[in-house]
Length: 499
Image (cartoon, rainbow, N blue to C red):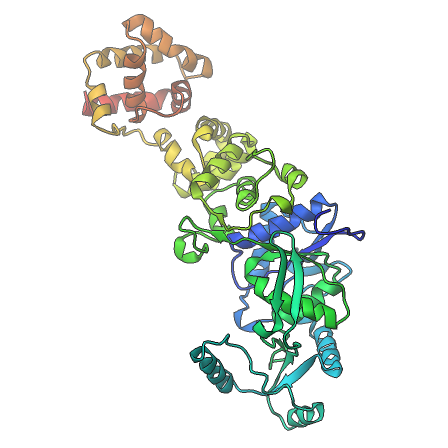
C-alpha cells in the first residue's frame, strides 16, 4: 500500500468547515479521500470543523451533506442528515468539533503541564506592531516569544485576575522537522522559520492546528488527504504528534484546482460551487468523473469512468504535483458522454424541470405525454453536454412560427422546387389520421418518388420548413414528434411568410 506498510484499517476523513457552499475543489478532496479509502477497503469519515464561529453559516452543514450525497460519495461515519435532522453515527464521535471542546482542553492542559505549550497575554495591537517591525527588517513575520518565559504560576495568577489569553505551542529552536508527503516526497522545515502557533483561542475554542491533530488521532485516521495550502502548517502538526506521544499519519497534500489562467478557482471567475454545477444540469457521474481527472491520470489514459471504475484504478502515485486546470469544455465533453449512456427514463425525469422552467410543459402535460417527452429527449440526447441545454435544443418542437435561422436557410426555402415538396408533404399527411413512427420513416421516400427531388435538395428545405434550422435531430424524429396538426400549421406559416 502507498505510504508505508499499514496493518490497521485504512481510515480517511473529509473535514470541511460549514462556511457556505461546497467548493468544487472541496468536492475533489472529498472524492480523492473516498476513492483511496474504498480502493483499500477502508472507511471514510465526515467531520465538521466548526471551531471558527465567526465564519459559521446556518444551513451549511445540511447543504454540504446533500452535495456529497448527490455526488455519490457514501462515507461510513460522521455527520448525516436523517428525516431533516443532523445526526452522528460511528464509534469515534462527536464528529462536530464544537461538541468536543472538553477533549481539546484536556490535551491543551497536558501540553502546558509538560512545558510544550504556554499562556500568551499579548494584545492584538502588540502583535501587529511586532509583525510590522519584522517586515521592515526583512524578517519572517511571526510571534516573538514575548510570553514564553512567563512562569506557570505567574500566568495562572494573571488568568485569575481576568486577563484575556491564548495558549501557544512552544517550538524548540533551530530544529529540523521532517515528514514524508506521498505526492511531494520528503519535506524538511526548520522551527526557526515557524510561528509558535496558537492552540487555544481566547474564546475557548481550539485553533484548526490543535483540533485537527487531536481529532485525527482519536478517530484513528491513517491518511490525511487535504489541499496543499495546509502544507506550511504540517510541521507544527508533526511536532504536536511528537509531544503528545502519538504516531503521525501519512500525509497527502493535493495540488490546487486552477482556472484556465492558472489562478486558484474562485467565485470571481464564475461557478465554483457544487450547487452551481448541479443547477446547470451536470450529472453527478459526469462531474465526479471529470473532477477525478483534474490532477490525476490513470495508467491507460482512459478518460470516461464510473465511480466503481475510479475506485478500482485510483492511486496517489498518479496525482500530479502541479495544480490541475478546471476546463469547462473538457467537463462538457465528459458530461456529454455520461448523458449519452444514461437511462432514458431517468434522463427524461431530470430534464423535465428545465422544460417546465422554459414554459414548454406543465404537470398535466407531463402526466399525459411522458412517452412523447421521452422520445423528444432521446432525439436530442446525443447533442447535450448538460441538461440545462435541453430547452434550447427542443425549442423547435414547441413553436409553430418557424423562422429560418439565417439568410442561407431563407434562400434555400425560396428555391423554385420547394413549393412542390411542401405540396407533396401535405398530400401524404392527408392520407393519415395521425403520424406514427412507420409513417415518419416512410414519408420522405414517398415525396422523393412523387417529386423526383432527392438528397440535400429534398431534405434541407423540408427540415428548414419544419424547424427553421438547416441541421439538427433526425428528420424522422422531428416529423414523428411534431405530429400532423403542428406540421400543417408550420407549413401554412412558412408558405404565407416566406414563399
